Image 1 (tube, helix red, strand yellow):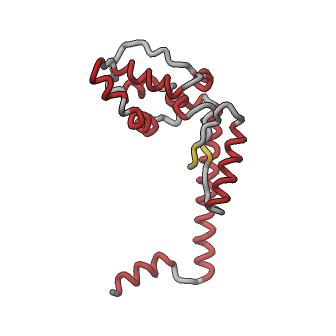
Image 2 (image 1 turned 30 degrees about the horizontal axis):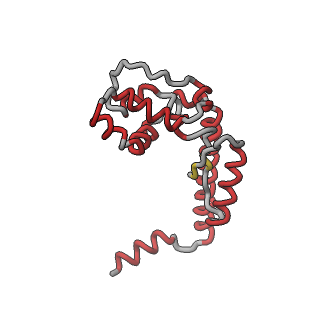
Image 3 (image 1 turned 120 degrees about the vertical axis):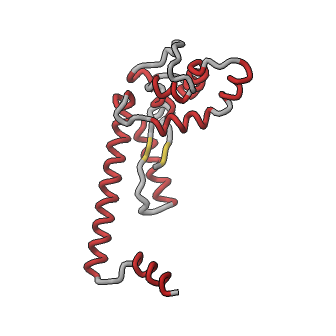
Length: 171
């Protein structure tokens, strides 16, 4: 997976850019372009429960005023809004808040890990496109693996994995 924000440009331009870069550096490497319309953080703004959990205050009641649906990809600076929303949701003050804010990259990673692919983010066209690309990549990979395995069986050549294990056992 190669992620690149669209950053106000057409998402297809970024997909083409990723395709060219991957082909230049790693020819024939299967890959999936991940291109959020604005920034990856826009996807994370849609799941308030997840945001509150990562903010270490899942039962918090402070209003976060998060964007809904397609509005998430229209936020001018979703990264800053995510940082601010995490801080507000934590309800920390002073030194504890400062320490919490220093861990933004960890919080963002945790939100990505918890992201429900069928949750609120599923309404975004950029997410739908990503999921379609991901499904196609897995289908392609599974086809490549089936074809490689079938070709190996037809050629009657020893399986390289088995050969490697056998050699290790002989020593």
